[in-house]
Length: 150
Image 1 (cartoon, one colour):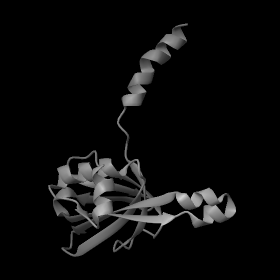
Image 2 (cartoon, one colour):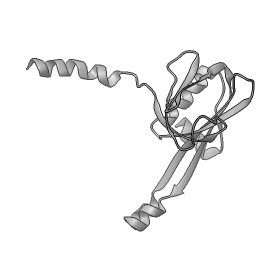
Image 3 (cartoon, one colour):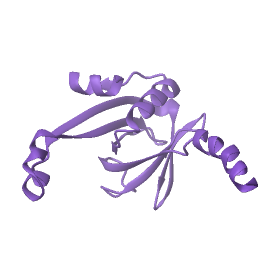
Image 4 (spheres, one colour):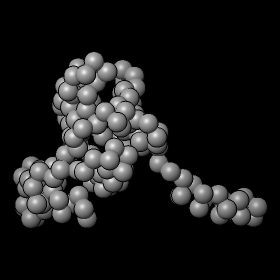
């Protein structure tokens, strides 16, 4: 009985606990230390910089060095699933969300990273980046604007 009561008291705290970051995939860019298609964790809890957790180690990007933010969306039909599973998948669209962060590195060179972001994380990342960098997110097209603004 006490265990159930303790679980009921702790459960809301766990549900409201702040997520430590968003899982993203490095789709490309100019940062040579990150291999393409590697999985990363992006964290923006720090007041000073974006933290990218990579297998090689952390990468810090100060918010003040970010000079461009761009959001894009690639929409495609699910052809492989339709062939393998069911023709009904032709009616479903697969949306892939991309976030590009442009910044100057410590040597003063322009750098860019392109991250593939999950649909459940993209809006939170866009809002947080706009607030922390003071930059407006540029949308690649009207469909990306609708998806990003929700």
